[in-house]
Image (cartoon, rainbow, N blue to C red):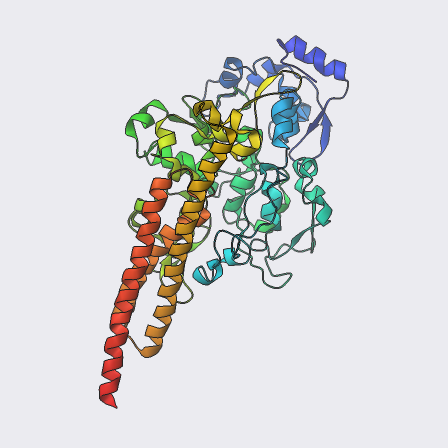
Length: 557
C-alpha cells in the first residue's frame, strides 16, 4: 500500500515495488497502474485556457506527488491521439489504497438497521402513505435508507424504479457491503438483458426511474454527463437517455470524488443542480443566512468549454457536501403549473434543487419554477413529491446555529486499532459511532443513556405529530369523496384542493426527512401543526358544503 508518497519518484518506486498494483476503471475492468510523465499530461492539461485547470489543481494540493497513472490507465493511446480517452478509475478502492481507514469504514454495514424496511406500514413512519400518495410510484415501495455502500444497489432493486427488471442473485447477498462496493452487478442480475425498455416484470411495480435519479446514487458517469444533464456532443448520457442502458453502465455508489477533488483534494460539490442553485441562481450556500453564505462560498469551475462543472468550496463544509443528496430535489417529469402541460425529461426543471425550506416550498414551486410533481388520484389536488430534505431542515436549527455540521454527528473522528486518527466514512446515526464520539463531545455532562433518551424523546414526539397530520389528511380525502359523490359544487372542491396541497406537503416533508424531525424539532412541530390546520379547514369547507347540498336535495323531494 502506498502511504503518502512524497515525490513523483517515490510514487514511481512504490508502484514498482508492489509490482502490479491494481486499479479499477470506469468499465469495472482491472488494469495495472503505470506511472506516466506528468509533464506530458501538463502539455495539454495546463492552466492557460478556459476550463483546463487540471495542472493548477494538481500542483497546489496534497495529491501533487501522486502520479497521474495512479488513477488513469491506458494513457499511451491517449497521448498518441487525444480523441482516444484514457480509462479513469471511479472505484473507491483506488483511493482506498492510500486512505485505508476511510475506505474500510465506508464499507461498514449497520447490522442494527433492518434492510428493506418499508415506511408505509403500521410500524413504519406512515401507515396511510399509499392512500395519501396515490398514484405516485413511491406507493410501490418506500423503504428506509441503509448504509451508503448499498445506495446504487438499493436504487436498482427497489420495486418503484425499474419494474422488477433488476433482481438479487441471492438474498444472501443483501448485506455484502464489499461485493456491493466492488460493483453492483456482483449482487444483481438483469431479468431481460437482451432488451432495454422500461416495463413491468412482475406485479405491483412501477417504472419511475430516469437518468437524473442516478446522479445521487452513483457518479460513475461524471465524465459522460454534461452540466445539468443537457444534451451535448461530448456527453454519452443526458436527461432523456434510455434509463436502462444508463443504469447498466454504473457500478459504484457514492464515489470519493463526489466530495473530494481528485487532483487538488479540495472540498467540492459535483451535483449540478446544487451548483445551479448556489451559483447560477445566486442563492448562496445558506439561503436563509446571508452572512454565512458570504463566508462559505462555492466557485463554479467549468471544464472542456463548459461541458462539465464542479463547485469548489471556499472551506470544508460537510453540510454542503452531504446536501448533494440529502436535500429535496426534482428528478422526474411533472406538470407545468402555468399551462397544465406535461413537463418531460427534456426540460431542465426535471433536474432541479429548489433550495427552499418547507414554509417557502410550495410558493416557490408555483411561482418560481411553475412545476407540479403529480395530482392526487382521489382529489385531483396538486402534489409535490418530497425527497429527503435533511439540509433544508437543518438550516436555522439550534445545532446549525451552534456550528455543528453533518460530519460531527454522522462522520466523527475515530482512532483505528493501529492508532491512526481518521474521519469515519461510515455515514450513520450518532448512536452507532458511540455517543462519546458524537453527542457527548458537546454535551460533556451527559451520559450515553441520557443522549439516547433525549434523541428518542424528540423523534417519538415528531412521529406522533406525523401520524396526527396523516389522520387529518386521510379524513380530508374521505370527506372529499363524500362531498363529490353528493354533488358539491366544483368551486368548493377547487378551494379544498388548495388546502390539500398545503397539508400534504407539510406532512410528507417529515415522512421523507430521515431524522424524524430531530434535526429541527421546532420547525417540525410548526410545519406539522400547519398541515393539520390546513386539513381541518378543508374538511370544514366540505362539511359545510355537504350540509348545504343535503338541504338543497331535501327541498327537491
